[in-house]
Length: 625
Image 1 (tube, rainbow, N blue to C red):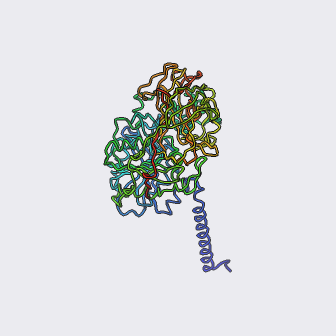
Image 2: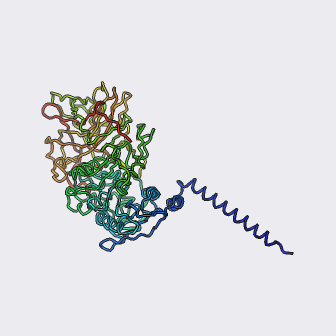
Image 3: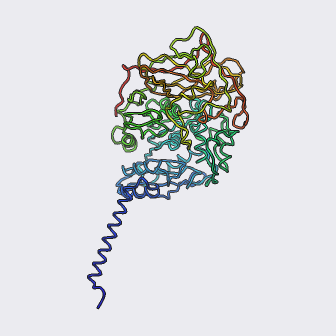
C-alpha cells in the first residue's frame, strides 16, 4: 500500500506553502518593525519595495576628463510621465550613508527621481588626490547635463542635503546651470571661499583661525586622498589634538596623504584655493534657494553671507532662510521639548518635510505656491521659545546698541572688576593677561561639530569654570531691569595690544542667570594679523595699540529680566580652535610657542565695546507655518 495518496500529497504541499507564506510574512513584518535598527544596505531595499521605488545602483557618469562618477538612481515604479530630479552628492558612500538614502526614498515616493552620487575620489567614483571640493563645479555640471538628457527627466533639477551635501550644492550653483531650478542647502556655510572676504573654506576657518577639533574629526575619518585609506592605529583624541606642529596632527595617527595637509598649510589668500570650487568673490548665485542653518552651527555666519550674496546678485531671486536652534544639521531634531546643551528648548518644531516638498513642487513641477507665504527670514528666539519673521536680516526694525567695557584694571576672571555698561567710561584703563599656548583656555560648548569625541560638548553650556581663569577677562552688566532681545550679528570692537607679533583674540557673549549660571550666547575669534582683512595680513608691532573687530556670529536670543549680560575675552579656545603659538610665523609648521602678554584698552579715547541689534516687542512679528 502506498505511504500517501495524491490527495494527501497535494494537501501536504498546500500546508507547506501556507506555512512558508506565513513565515515569510512574519519575517517581513518583523523586518519592517525593526527596520530602523537594520544597516542601510538592508533598510533601503526593504523600504523601497514597500513604497514602490525602483533602485538602479550602477549609474555611471563620465566627467569631461574621462573620470567615472558612480551614482544610485531612485525612481517611483509607477511613474506615468517624465520626472523632476533631486540631485544629491556626498563623500560618505552613497550605498551606506543615511544622509542621502533616507531622503532619496522620501522624495522618490513623492514622485521624484533622485540621483545620489559619490563625489570624485571617494568610494565608487574614480579619481585620485581627493581634496574638498576640487572638480565639484565641473562634475556637477556634467552630472546635471546627464540628468536632463535622460528620457525620464522633465529637464528640471533640484539639489538637497546638509553639511558637505549642502556645500556641494553651492559649488554647482556657481555655474548657474539653466536646469538647476532650486536648492535646499542646510548647514552649508562651508561652501564659501573668498566671497565677502570670508575665506571660510569647508567651514573650518574663523577669523583666520583653523577650527581644529572639527577639522581633525572630519579629515581623520574622511580626508584620505586615495581610497581605501590605510588603517588607523588606536589613538586618544585629546592627546592627538595637542600634537605640534599642527601639520602632523593627522599624520601621527593616519598613514597616507590627507587633504588636511592642504587646508592647514595653504595661506588663506593663496590663489590655489580658487581651484577648490568654493564660492568666490566674483561669483553670482541665481538659483532659488531655501537655506537652513542653526544657531549652534560653526558655519552660521558664512551661510548668512551666502544668503546675502543671493540677494545681492538679484533681489528677484527667490530666497528663504530658516535659522533654528540646535547644533550642526540638527534642526529637524528640535521639537516641543528638546535639550540643547544646558538649555531646554520648547516649541522649536517646524514642518520641514512639508516645506521641502512645497519648495521643490513649485520650482520643479510648477505646482502650488512654494513658500511664498513665509517671510524671507524665519528665526527662532532662544530664551523666548518663539519663532519670528522678517523680510531682511537683520530685521530693519532692529536697533543697534553698544555696551562698553570698563574696569579698574583688574577684569581677570569672574572674580575681577570688569563691567559691561551702556555708556563709555570717562576714565581710561587697561586689562592684561598672560596667554600661554601650552596652557590654553579649554573649550566649553559653542559652535563645534563633527569631532568624533563625545567629551567635546557643543551648544549653550555653563562657562563658570573657564571664567575662573586669570587669562580670561570678564565684563558683566548689572541685572537687566527689562528683557533684552538680541537679533542679528554680534561684534566685539576692541582696542588691544600684545607683546607678540601675532596672537589670537576670542570673544564670547554670555547670558548670566540669577542663580549664577553663565550660558554662552555666541562666540568668535580673530587672528590679529587678519585685523585688516584676510587678504591683507599684517603682523602686530609689539606693545602698540591697535583696533580689531571680532565677529561672534549672529543670534536671536532673549535675556530675561534679572539676567545679566557678559563679555568674556581671551586668546584661546582649545581644542575648538588651534592655538596661536604667538611667533608671527606660519604656525602650522612650528612646534614651540612663546608666551604673549595681551592687553585690552577701554575708556577715554580708546573705547572697547560689544555691538548688537535689539528688537523690541512692537516690532517682533510671529512667523507663520
